Image (cartoon, rainbow, N blue to C red; front, side, top):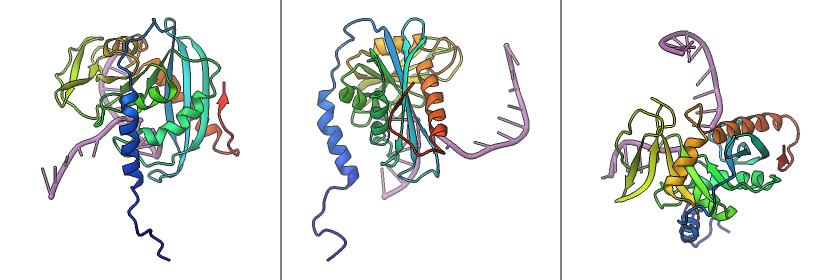
Length: 239
DNA sequence: GCGACAG
DNA sequence: ATCTTGTCGC
């Protein structure tokens, strides 16, 4: 009775690669069917001892009016990070709790603004693509730092941008959301064009480097994590 | 082979 | 992501 199997089962990491390979063809490069009326931001906060593969996490989703950026709906979920942080496999770490949070919404957002990459990924299937396919909604990725690719430094003005190239294709765009700030990296997730994705990110970032969707979901996920620290946690909770 | 590497 | 003091600037 060896503790190990005789046969070499695929490692968890290898299985994750296979899942991405299977799901990637489901991504649609189609444009938005209509101007979005609502935008949703998603983020995850981590707590407890870091580095561990099963720490406490809290996810938050905040739905905003696409024009006024007024908060229309929000939901949170707490859980466990059952997957380590591996660049390229980031989605497997945050997806479960993010999906749980999404299920707590009363409304269905028109577009999901994800905290990370979409197409700008080694296998062209980052978190935003993954989330788009699973939720069946238009998604885009807005990352604070690029994961790969090369690009020219964009101009200094708000709205200035430059295409990110990787392997001979444009996979993202670095976009200056405020004058003089470090650009964010925007890439398509699902059912949206890169032009529309950048326009939405810019519209959602009237005051700061990061869009309000990201800032609000970041804040909410942290408070949700703190609130769930003492009591025995429950499932998704709507606000 | 070596280094880099979303959050 | 998270751990953290002081510091620059409006």
